[in-house]
Image (tube, rainbow, N blue to C red; front, side, top):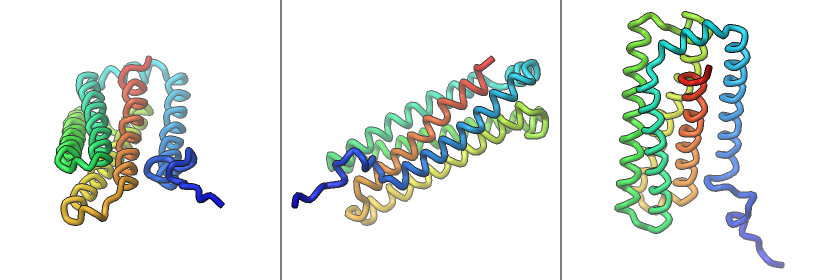
Length: 192
């Protein structure tokens, strides 16, 4: 009887099935929040419109570009790992973490000005959604960076312990953060 290599099978996604179940649940959670946001925005149109005008579209746009660039370097890191190019893998992973950290810095600046202007989670329905969606996303970015730090540390200390599955799982998680931001940004900053 022929042995089937499940890793090359379409049913085994990069990073493993468990990770993709987690990603699906995360996307479902954000999706439900986005649907609730859209329903609320229809019933409180003028409030949402006026509140949206108080967001900094420049910072939001910069963060979008930052996450797209970090996603690019994460994809490059996965490819370099597959090619056994440890030097380029390491530099791409460092760039991913550095650019991801820049997202955190810019988001923190934005939060500072929201707090300074008393635009808090209890200001109105729009800002309740704004804070919940962006903080939940920010937590995912921080977790993603921690995952990448662990991957980098382990590849430096014990190069044989990290597998392509580990790197692909980290990449899939990081790309989930990118995707979620690409849904949140136009919803909060641009949608009317």
